[in-house]
Length: 372
Ligand code: AMP
Ligand code: TRP
Image (cartoon, helix red, strand yellow):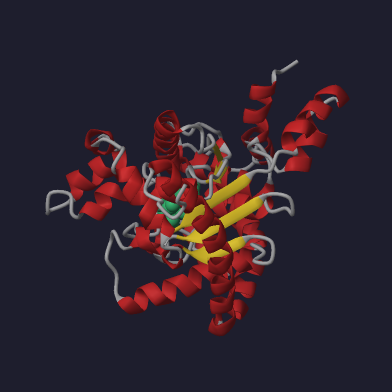
C-alpha cells in the first residue's frame, strides 16, 4: 500500500471525488479521505496580456474550473502587476483585464465560490514581495531560465528590475494566501521551486508559518506548442496569430489554423513529443479536449493520415470552445457586472491577505501594535 505522502502527491492532480472513486480500495480510500478533508488553499494567476489561448486553457484554466468545490479556499488572480513587466498602453491594459475576467467566467469559473480578483487591488502582494526580496539571494534569480532568455533577447541588458524580480512577486502571490496547491502550466514549475525554497528558509528563521506548495498539472498537456513552430510553447505574444488558437476564435479560424499546423513528412499519427513535436502537439490537444490518453488518441487515429487527423482534432477543439466563445461574447458586453465581480473578489481576498500579512509582520518583529 502507498504511504500517506505518496498518496498526497498523487491526488494533488485530481479533483477530490474523481480521484477517490477511480483509484482506491476501501482501506486506502479511508486514509485518502482523511487527508483530503484537510482544507486545500488553491491559488493561481493569469496575466492580462491578451485573449487566453488553448495552451492557457489546457495548461491552467481547465484545471481551475475542475478544481472548484465548496470546501477549499480558491483564489484566481488577474495578475496585472506581473503584466507591467512588458509595458502596454493604458487602453490595452484596461481592455485585457475585462477580457480575461470574461474569459474566466465563460470557461466556468464561479465567482460566488471562488475568489476572482485583480492582483493590484490587494496591496499586500507587493508588501510581501519586498520581504521576500530581502531574503532571496540575487544569484538565485540570475539563474532562472526566464530571466536568462530575456537577457539574451534584450537590447537593453535585460530591461527592468521588475522583470528580474518577477519570480519574487509570484512567490508573494502564492504565499500571501498560504496556498497549498497551484494549478498551472509546465513553465511555472521552476517558480514553484523558488516559492518552496523561500517558504522553507522563512520557516527556519521565524517558525513554521508557510505550507509546502504543490503544482497541479497534467504532463500530457502542460506545455502546448506553437502551431507554426512546434519547437516553442504556444504564447500570447508569439509573432504569428496562426501559431495559436485563442478562446474567441471562430470555428473556421480554428479549422484553418489546425489545418496549417506544421507537422513533418510522416503521414502516420504517432506520439513522440521529442522527435515528432508537431503531430504530438495535436495529440496532446486532442487528449486535453476529450479527456483521453495519447494511446487512446493514437488508437482513434490508427487509420488516418495527419490531414484527416487534423480535421478530427479541429472538431474536438470546436466542440469545447464554441460554447465558451458564445458565453464570452455575451458576458464581455457587461463591464459593470465584470467590475462588480472583481470588486467583490478583491474585498474577499483583502480580508485574508491583511490577516496573513499582519501575522508576517508579527513574526518579523515589525508590528508594534501590541504593547505587552
Ligand atoms: P500566462 O498567459 O503566461 O499568464 O499563463 C497563464 C497560465 O497558462 C499559466 O499557468 C501558464 O503556465 C499556462 N500556460 C501558458 N502557456 C501555456 C502553454 N503553451 N501550454 C500550457 N500551459 C500554458
Ligand atoms: N507567472 C505566471 C505566468 O506567467 C502568472 C502568475 C503570477 C502565477 N503569479 C502566479 C501563476 C502565481 C501561478 C501562481 O503565467
